[in-house]
Amino acid sequence: MSEQREQFTSRWGLILAALGMAVGTGNVWRFPRIFATNEGGAFLIPWLFFLFAWSIPLLILELGMGKKTRMGLVGAFGKLIGRRYSWMGGFVAAVTTMITFYYSVVAGWCLRYFFTALSGGLARLTDAEAAQQAFEHFATSGWALPFHLLAFGLGAWVIWRGVVRGIELANKILIPLLALLLMVAAVRALTLPGAERGLHFMFDIDWSRLGDYRIWLEGLTQSAWSTGAGWGLLLTYAVYSRERSDCVRNSLVIGLGNNSMSLLAALAVLPTVFASFPTFQEAFEVATYSGPAATGLTFVWIPILFQKIPLGSIFSAIFFLALTAAALSSLIAMIELITRILIDLGLQRKRAIGIVFAAGFAGGVPSALSLNYFNNQDWAWGLGLMVSGGLFAFAAIKYGLTRLRADLINLPGNEITLGPWFNGLLGVLVPVEFGAMLIWWSVQSFGWGEAWWNPFAVANLGTCLFQWGLAVIVLLALNRWLSNRTLGPPGTALPEGGRL
Image (cartoon, rainbow, N blue to C red):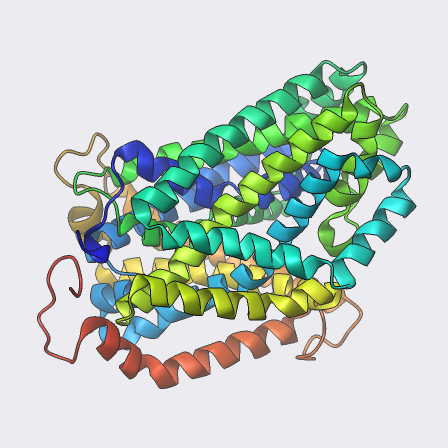
């Protein structure tokens, strides 16, 4: 079987791999903090709403595009809506690639804290000041480099083994392990004295909060970043899906599974926080503490909190192993996305992986040495994901929404058929949401204390426009070359599965 014809062995092979793509550190580390920052229960409503109004429609689209074109992002956009638009797939790929560089650093942090928890070293972190100093020293002194190398190396090794023996097998281990570990941590948290205060905080709904537009934009942002919708990762995995794979049903399972993992993580973290402090205000301040690189709750407070409970060192190791599993499963998907594009350009898998490994390690070095650089990349390319989602919506509209449903989604054997209402969801609501998110986050940059136009600021609009602009200029210049290498010269007849 050729590389391009390798497929997941079953529907569940694809779903577990896709869950591995979706479930990452955003579920385990970001969601509990954002949930708490938005004052608990009310946040669940917009978060769940946008799962169905943004994330699942884009997941369906990605699955359909990958299955139809059997090509990575550049080829998929070019083949579906025309060669002149190949650069758009390249931009989505550029965004995810830049995220991959610093995400591998995050995976390295998770590995290091797991090893430290396993050895009992986290017991030395007895207060927030000591824990924050320890994290900042590790993240900026060069010690993060070998863990970044280890994390990227593990991800590249999985990709090197192929779709079935690598991606599918790894996620068959990582995702059940992650679910089990989070359930164990959640059960332990819920049995702590005072944990019920955390449950009340999580599930008591203050309906007046729903009148605040910010909670809706935060819910949309969390859903967009957490599920991986619009990243191109699920499109890449769909290249290896089986012919009768149901895009709609699979997307529902992936989206709901992702949100379930987020809730499990919150149940493991927030009741522990509230059980550890006598007053609501103290617990709330800890739960919403951002800290360096928005890592405060995870890498500063979690090591301290778990030391306060019986068998805390064991549960600290469990938590950081779960976080590591989540980070690695997402990193694997990111590495495969880049590798798939190089394969479409004509490289053999093993050679492509060698290039990705070398570039990935080098690209992550600045983030492994500087938290300011890390924050800049997270800001610029994290916001770039919104643009990626908008480009997917553009591709759907350009192809024709009714035609798209017929050609890519409502296929023979599907259990769920989408009606004309999906046209309005993907063609109207998703673009409106994209515009609202992009405008809102852009406006946030005006209050960061630096001129908004400064391209070298850590986190403002100017640095986004500068970096995105460079990517667009390069991709437009290379568009014809990318199209010809991926799709063949103009006039080339392409088989249904892409270039052989």
